[in-house]
Image (cartoon, rainbow, N blue to C red; front, side, top):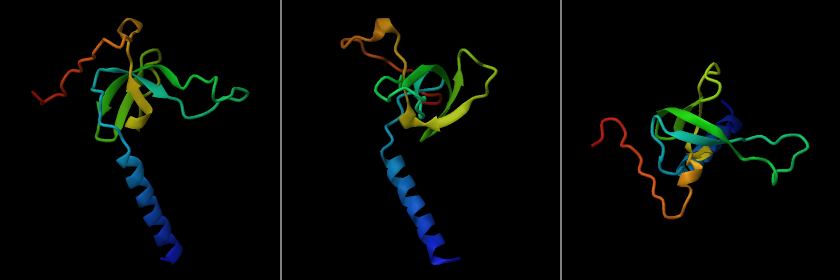
Length: 111
């Protein structure tokens, strides 16, 4: 194993540690509706005008850093896994006030 391979692996581990260190605490639970941040830009559309958050998805599973999402509109498409930093809790328009608090159900096994 060459020196460059070892350095590359160490750098990858360091980058992963920093990225996971910035992860927010999980505010979503299985069964919640969340919005997903789209990672790619569309041709001919500036980032300022692009919709960054897409349709609500159903949370199928939650781990310490990742969530498994399933589309409400297209259940035939399989679920996909993404990082917690790319999702946020979906609020209905009637719930989007500063005086509204969202109470999340406790995860299974927690009282």
